[in-house]
Image (cartoon, rainbow, N blue to C red):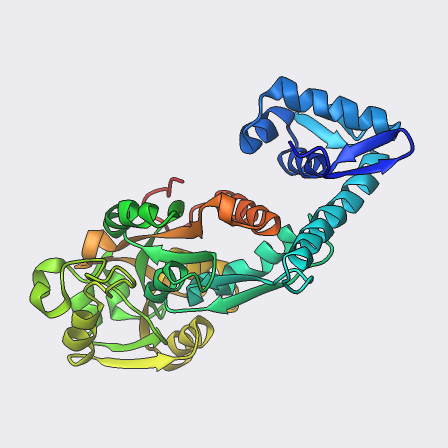
Length: 357
């Protein structure tokens, strides 16, 4: 530990690293969980807490049935400690010749995810910080990983099939980029309540595509591979140059199905839902997109499982991020907020099987 990185006042001092430790304990509400997160032995972290509390002259945490919680003075200390930690990062940037202000945290999100998740994620983040800038940027789901690979951003939230995620895991790890499963989801047929297709428990995607289909801009879905000529779209997730991801199967989907049906592309999911309600169109949406955006309550529609789609329509939400040692402190906290938010979600009421995380 660098003993020079500390705040001194008279006879007492607090190492700057210890502010981060206290903030992590507050986030986890558990010393043992915080120790695991920080890569420390629990007894070492407990000793650090005692030393900091001794230097301050008041307890930061008090024990609760579920772990620990900050005291009244502890709340004030943690608020100031968070500011000190971030300001110190600014100071280091200034010393290295970079602008002293902390860069915004840029998060790339697939549009249907961004619609429901951006606000609760921001609320969770600002429970830890009263300052800082979050920038949520919508991006087609299959363009998010290439941008992270090119170091254009550090964190992205996207949809991937489980098979594609497994195929990408090792190549991404070689670039110190990681995927973490957040939520298991699937595609559903989203129909008007009086749609004739609603009489079927399972709707075949080929039959659905004969209707007037409303989709969001940059929408992609994946039919069974047996219907696709692999030579048309390539079989590798990483091209030979290793710098970007191929859009596996999507080109064939657009050619084969959009030419056969009547597809209308709208700017966002909310307008798609209105098209289903007002124009009696049909659509294909994920469970998360149906439930998390309440502009059109899911109970007003007829929702059916789809068949004829890759992996039975199953598609999951993943967070993609650079190795944590490459992330700034605020980015690591935001990554934790992402994980906590999606772990709090319950399966949609119409789900045929409970998502596991």
